[in-house]
Image 1 (tube, rainbow, N blue to C red):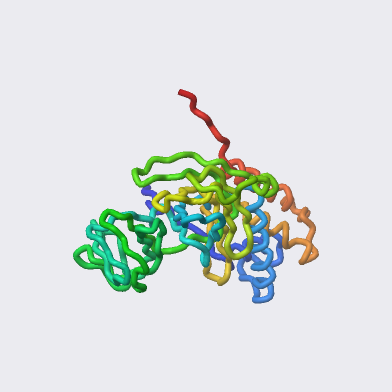
Image 2 (cartoon, rainbow, N blue to C red; image 1 turned 135 degrees about the vertical axis):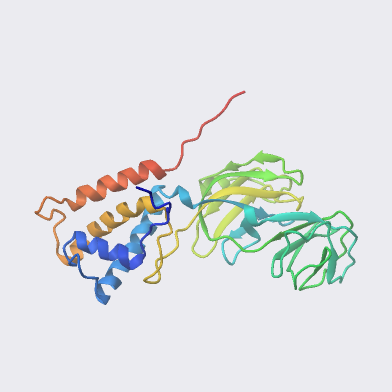
Length: 313
């Protein structure tokens, strides 16, 4: 007997809610949940998965990202409307193949292989700053057209950085390092306490970044960097944990591995039980609370934050 050869099983939002309501005997196994039940379930489901993020169970949300620093920049907004921070897999660098004058609307680079129409593009200027605009049209023969012309000159071999999309709001920084143009990394210290970071006496001193502190605010998280940047060709590479995506529509799949769906269903059932006047002990040999607790424990053991291991030469 052959196997299926497929590994793409999943459940969408309404299927998860219906499965949870079946555990409570609110919905018959042969029926689907009604509109009001779906509305109630969707609210509880979104609240539950957001709360789980505070318990360090979603390491599948870890991403490597690159933050492009600004000259003398002390604070950065990280998120969809924030500063220039993209997925590491989406961030590229090249150099100017020829000098670009102030007011130039095109630049010639060493390679346009990873540059696309609409990309964010940052050009290192001779004054030490990084000027950002977007790519206007598909590059050809290593010539890139800029949406906004340069405000200052840029010499040959100055660096050019590109990426396509800004990151989702991070809720935690797992680790971070400062990367130079040769891709050499220096680890950075993460300061958890706002009070500790604010006790730094001279917050405007410049140099290579050494310490970071992030506050996970609502739209964009806020990142503090010390010392402030004096070399815009260096970037901060971080492993961050992004927020879980919402269940907005009936056909949305879980923003999670399929292995966690059983825990999602049992725990959603436990959360919905009071709203339907149901006991967590069904009386027919099924303990909702026990199954919710056990499935959550299995999930957390599998997807909890990994412990740090240090290798000493």
